[in-house]
Length: 465
Image (cartoon, helix red, strand yellow):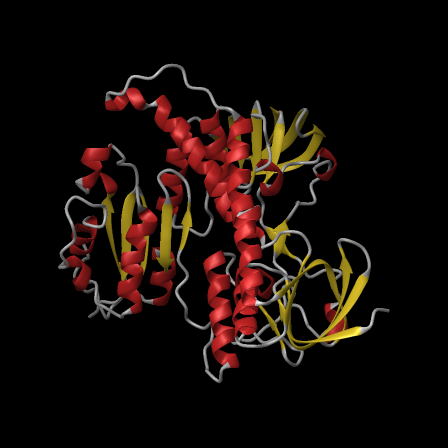
């Protein structure tokens, strides 16, 4: 075994929260090592958030070009060069990797490329990508292991070599017919994008609605938007078995409403959730316990069951968003400095980057009414916002939930600039402002945020006795 090397802190995984923690500790004078198996900077800049939005944007440009005539712009035939789409994405990723390498160098944190396995409490054996092993002994250990796409145990599916988000972002060709298993965020973003690139697309969702965490009216509007662009949606449909090979020809046998059906496709994309990267990492040797679902067990300070060992981001069961991993870093950073920061009660905003996008922060109407019987719901069609008269982007609606005490419990929007409008509502929620602050605020005309005046003007009178 290699000779032990002692560090003040070792971080396994270079994802969002882990890298910021490493840079912070190194700049504070500590000796820090980060072990990364493959993706410098983690999954977000390499295979998830930013690359997918890069290609979603390319698909949006293709869609706009095809519809340019509606705005008085004359164009010729529009086609998509997937090789160039892929090249544009790769150029962005390489730039982000270069940025991370420079940042590691500037901070003084050591980046070690290899596969990490715990062999004892705070002892990490690294099988180096370039060959050989190292043994790192840490005073403080941070687990930033991430997750990977789950492949459901459907007969024939794994043998079909389906695409996940990773492989879908590396395609230099256009699938003739893409069958998407899963009607959540990842599946729907890819479904619309590939439809806009020119593929036939079918989304197969096991539950009765798309975007399962959302209110039914939100899911219905999302379905309407993607179906209007030609995406076929099959709800309450379960894939029983798969034949063939993705990229060539596949047949999916579907159980739907008590009857059997078949779908012939060229490619399969699996977007059916994610699994934590906690298997075969030696966590048990370090005294790190897992939950029933395989995530690392942590308290609200992100401390694991092992001394001086923390977990960050998705592997700790935190909501699976880059911005939440960043906040996990803040929790640990502040507590290491003697603070008392926790993950309890934090607002979790998120967006589905469809066109138009879906954004939500706080409770859905369904959740709010379970928590507060006097919760009130206000709704406004996006078409009522005058900005849409100038852009013709009028699909969707805004919806707000207000509690008995006039505080905003949640906000959902489907529509242009939804993520930006949501941020304004989130700030009001963080400040504890009553909904009337947005109802009576002065917003620039004509912007989408101006619609908040009318939305909160629609809040019903208090339902409390």
